[in-house]
Image (cartoon, rainbow, N blue to C red; front, side, top):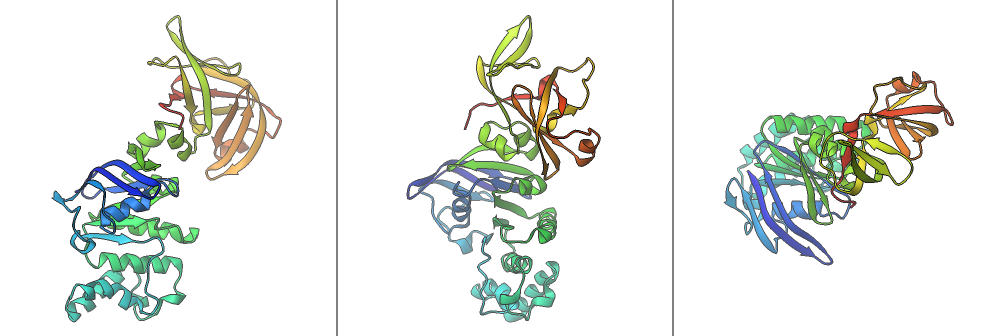
Length: 352
């Protein structure tokens, strides 16, 4: 459906380098990265607003690298909406049809249809300066969708929307995708990638460094950068040893982790997901691969409940639900025990 082959683009001191993507029809692909990573520049290349220095872009098997935006059958919704303030909502949505020379009767019916689909039919006669962020987002989306694009490109679509409205916008995007629309959505927000994408790519310094399903990417990050995006904070510089057929990881401190059977390098950076670690307020019995005594150093609310910091010779960060936390009856300076299975340790390929 959408294929990028070896795309390179130099933009001042920044470059997009050797970008390869293959997005299937009907897929919801989220490109995740920090500001300045190249997300928006890549969308502009796909849309035809800028031209790659080298490489090819295919849509439905056709090479569109040298085609203009109007000839690519893609729709781009800008981060700042790019709404015309001197036009009504109807005028904004109709603009792209007028520019294509579509007949007036068709414009009327198509604008009305798409406005009703996006629940903004009641806004058609209003000017845009008093609209909310969510309403402006839907107007910008309607203006793009009225041209029936094959691919919808979304540039940080929820960056300027109140938190209370984001769920509604997400439902709109999911609905469009379920109807078969291919969507490429760029964002810096890990939560958007988790809640929307069927596949995710992580871009850093002009490179796509990991790609796959959200579950695969964020449970098995290839390096520290991706791991941090997944909210993982437990990083340990370790030396790996095979002792009597069992693998162990020796931390820079005094701890030794028991690992599952695998192939390990001589040393490296290992992570343990926050939610793989369990806390016990009393010493647990036998049967745990890894069990360490520690002291609670910090307790703070988190997005999913509570984050507990435990000093067990190394610092561990553990995510608990509110109910799990309440059941422990612990506070700062409490003595606790932490446990995690041998398969919880993930060795990173690099320390980026």
